[in-house]
Length: 123
Image (cartoon, one colour):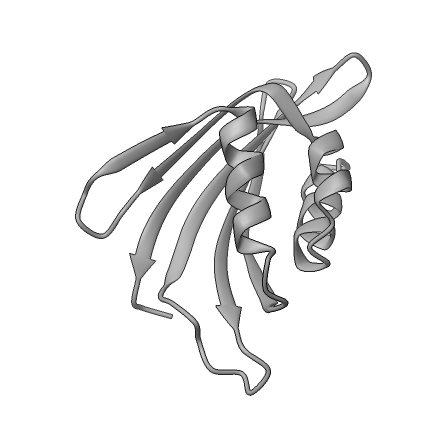
């Protein structure tokens, strides 16, 4: 896989750069979050931008472990572990396991789908 859309997204996320994130997300984005209570929240583009803005109100260290990358047709699928730390490297909350799906739209790689299982306690 020679596409690096996930690298651009994760770099922007780590730098809390909402403007770059907006350019990588598809306007048709569907983002699903499954909480540790098994409740599923589904967000569209505008709602997920609001989530990022809320999370970015405080400076924090975003960490990402890319666990797996593959392709399905022309789509790129990336599985990552996400966690946040304070300035002293203390976890701010349990980790999340996320599947990101990217597709080429008008010549650019865009995030079209994001599925996240939250509250992961294993490393």
